[in-house]
Image: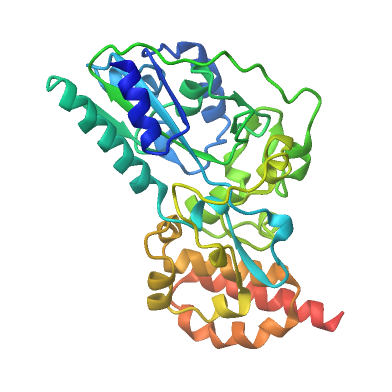
Length: 347
């Protein structure tokens, strides 16, 4: 049966996959407690909950006997080839159809395929939707190693790939790959590339300083020093991944299983500043960017505008002052952007 399963997964276009037995992650408990105690999770309080479920797949799904892990690469562009001047930058993963839906759909197909073989089979699908230590699962299955930026890195595909898991109530033959040793060696490119110094030391990420966290998860006023370090990123950040040798050595994919829309990666800031809610909903329909919501997205756009140094954006920014009077967070960053660009003009 396992060969049929492998063939079917490949038919779905999935190149990265493994099947392993449930594992006990208690060896990660001290690390997680120290990380949370250091408040490195910021305001992501869900990270501090359900610790025991993170450490034991059986506590998340008591019937689990096997775990299928799948990975889908999405690296279809290189930032060196992209015009970034005066643009709002969106992380590569978010310029495409929402990966949660795409991967869940494929995992549902695999579960249906298995149930055709055995109607007793049941399963649970997880794609960033439950307390699963998915990078640790993938590492132990031989899919890759954890880099100094805490990303899972595949020797073949780099770190630009999504993960999803199917927990099954039957014991399938394991499909594991040889363990991948830590291959970073003395390389510190990701640590040095992080604009906000969120990688406090190799393998330790202070997520509360990470630009991805600030532009997606954090909903408040961003401190001036962090705001200045955000550059023109308006949703997510790829800086630490883009410099990784395992990403740089690969050619961009011509096609991904999750189609992208490259034009979304670097829309002109002038266009974004004047964006209305209905336009936001239409342009980013079906993409992860919708998660930010219109007003927080505009907060990020105004920060990027202020950091751009482009004084010609002042007129457009001033047009939006009345629109956000009722939102003190967005209004604060709008005024900050105006002040920054005015100061640049007077210098």
